[in-house]
Image (tube, one colour):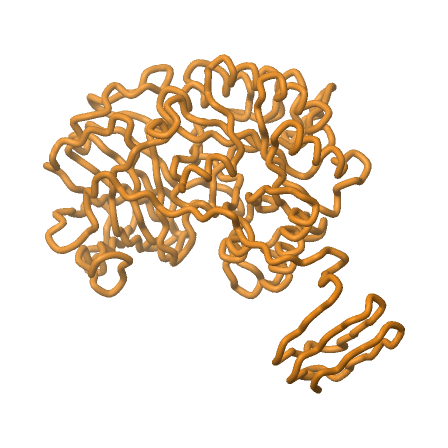
Amino acid sequence: MTAVGYTSGDPRKVNDTGDTLTGSLTLSGGASNLTVGGSGTVAGDLSVAGRLAANGVALPATFPGRKAPYRDPTRIVTHFQTGHGWTTSGGVDAPTTVLNDTTDFAKGTQAAKVVFTGNGNLDVSSLSAMDLTGKAIRFQVKVDDVSKLSQLNLRIGTSATNNFQWQTVALTATSKVYRSGEWTTVTVGWADVHSGAGTFSLNANRVPSATTGFTFIRFQGVATGGNCTVHFQSVEIIDNVSATFPNGVVSIVFDDSWDSQYTLARPKMDQYGYRGTNYQIVDRVGQAGRLSLAQLRTLQDQSGWEIAGHAYSTAIHDNRLTAFTARQVDDDLRMLRAWLVSNGFDGDSYAYPGGQFESTTDGVSIEKLVARYFASGRTVLSGYGASTNVLTEQYPPPRPYRILALSGISDASGGQGLVVNLTAAGGELDTCKRLGSWLILTFHVLTTGSTGGDDGVITQTDFNTLIDAINSYGIPVKTVADVMRYYT
């Protein structure tokens, strides 16, 4: 079908599935209609004199405004190439462990493959003394089957009995730091240190007794439910958050378009000039109890907030992205981004509904779909196993589409979800400032009454207390997009 022109009042219909327009198609009248009953293609040019839209939303060409490259490491400890000097001990299957594995690697020509049978170790000693003052450790690993990995701990010190420990497996029912069969980059800093042993210790405020003179590194793997294969590719030392933000940095973020974020949170944040990131569910904007377009514009234009994306449809949000096909997820992301742009919102950040970022029902990476439309993806990952301290985000974040954040901040929560713990000496605000981290605090509903036992609800009193504490600590507050902007 070539060069077909339609005039006003003259609708035509192409009903056959797979019809192909091999020339150019021009719709020239405002009332002209083209209804395609199948999934045909246009092999030539398609020119629309009016507006191209999907579900009533105009579709401009929109792309993430900022990309997030990795920062070059300041020091490479190892890339596990020939002669790396690491050895194994404990619960490791020797016949299948290959410390110079040339069959599966991400850098150079090899990696170290360790098959853990229980509580086993991968160690290196007699290193040149490392000064980790103001530094963080970044490492890259791949876990073949995450369901068999109970723990993957990092120990740094002078021996197997004198060291500090970090835990890196964030345990939630639906999402984890590691995914099966994926090379994953992890960064941990002093704000995340879990414990000390032997001559090394943490005081009551989680301050380490030393940050220099380290000559020993251990990866401790704990396998359950069968042998667990972990591939190790690199260990690097990089500047921690304090290199860019001397007092750490906090982002205050809000999900689900609740109007209490405008009526109760905004006035308190305005008191200090703090700007939040507000993630929208488009279907809910303008509904009773939800934010209106006018309120969102005021948040952005008058208070400087970032208006960002959470979901276009309520169904996508409530059922999570993992319940849909790649096409359905991509459609929702496209319409969400188009809605933001068409309404004048410049937010470039995305929050996964329910924090779930794994794969669609047809096996496509959700993170890669989000990367088509947004510059970052935020999770609700933050917890260390049974510990009460929080796994915070580092800067630069090693996985910009898997950003860590603390949610469930409420008197209905325990541990670091309690405002009294967050604001206390040795709490997350304290360690954020002194030891350096990017602390992302997530909120949903604010109330002037009781939370009713719902950890998605925080009282205005508690919220105000937390904001006052951030100010008293002197920690800068920046939107997620503003922190990510420092990448470039």
